[in-house]
Image 1 (cartoon, rainbow, N blue to C red):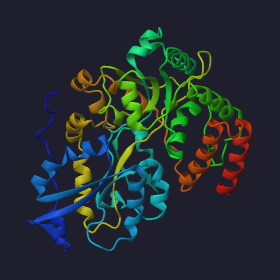
Image 2: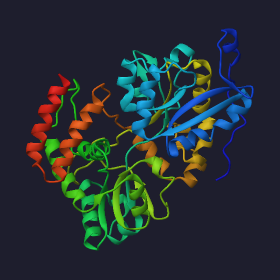
Image 3: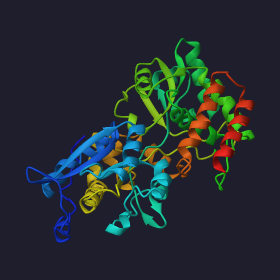
Image 4: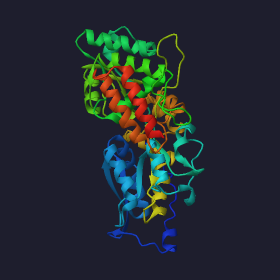
Length: 407
């Protein structure tokens, strides 16, 4: 793909720091900004845009990459840091917003003149506001997709456009199992991954985990039937980690899995296809929005001693031209101007699917109890999948614990 770099680089008003007398750490005469990023394609996209910013603004950006769990802990602990240079700019999962906002972890970007422009897909910004002000910017358009091995799909008699419901997904996975392959690969390596893997299935059955008042709705018919389906679906395959899923789908050892756009960089796109789930449980059922957001946003730590520069870097990384350039590094911006760009689509036709999914996605519940909630729900889902408890009894017990948690 040809280089997308535009000559347009936004101006950074670094001189405002000097005017307020802020003492900044320096190395070889350059200011230092510390970035805490999610490892993988997400951090690679950010890193692709740093050199020009550093050169034009006499700044050194030090990047530390973390697993999801370690990143959350690092950012949460930044409020306790007193030493220089702990966290300035950070990647934040949308499900952490309630906890971080309540805990004063993030800086108010509106206070520094930052706002979200109309080119950003509106639904992706829902998690970015707190009390009407901007605290986050949607950077990487992670949203669940159905990943499939192209050869297995074709030999089963299906084309991608034929996958109109979960019933069709089951048929392909059963076919794969019948010819000695793995059918559906599910992420059973943590409660978080198991729950998030299950959510698109739950949504396709018209269910969800909480109602509009954040009361648990686990013990209902939609949840029950989604659980039965998921149990049968994973019986066609096996549990696998992210890297195992990518390898097994790429080499034709397995048929399908729930994946994320950030995995495109690793998967062999000659053999692996991607599409949004239809949102239908069966051909005659209603179609629901079944796309779950895992968007990686950018924020500034409230404990940062150089917020102005960190906000300037965030604004630079969110610039449409810089984000267009990030596609070469595996970036998936939440911008219409990038996801509908004809040259981008020539090399990444799947971005059209991603744009559609991002327009109607759903964030996980934005509540301070979410991490405890998913631990409880994941524990019971795992027990159900392992036949340690029946679905009915498991969901009843989960509902009881979740009701107690949400009191």
